[in-house]
Length: 82
Image 1 (tube, rainbow, N blue to C red):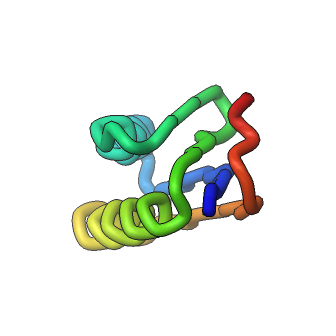
Image 2: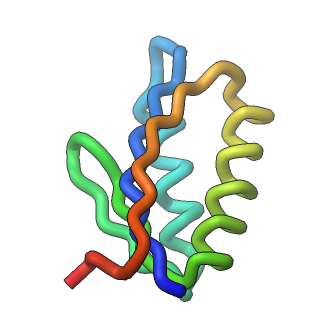
């Protein structure tokens, strides 16, 4: 099953841009994911299990490395990247 996710990350830190860029770059490094970013959010597309495992991994890492962060996500079944 395919999955589309729209995710916004809000680090509760004054210098927040590097935290967001790091998260996006880690997702982009996974070749099975299609990742599209704009100034408001990032969209992630791919196989459900792959998307969810990578989001879980990288969200946890963000919490561990950067502390308090708010993630706002929308999950939509199917691949809406086209």
